[in-house]
Image (cartoon, rainbow, N blue to C red; front, side):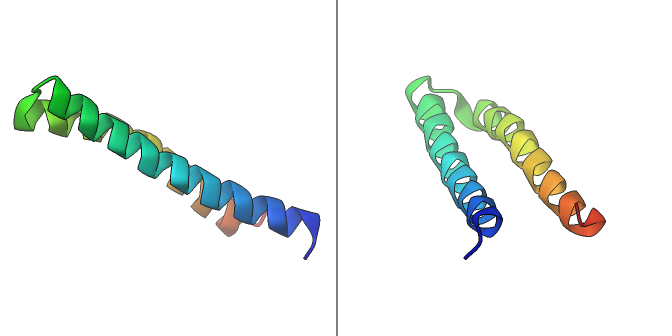
Length: 66
């Protein structure tokens, strides 16, 4: 396996793991602060925007074949 392929796979897997860990942190924060449904939704919406940016970047790189 070439270094570039390995790096791309590891970045994808590790960033995905980081996103899952951040989702757990946000859920725990919402639970401990008693944010309620709306507050929890706002917290996850903010996290979702970051995840959406990562997904869009990945798709654009694949489409543009950089």
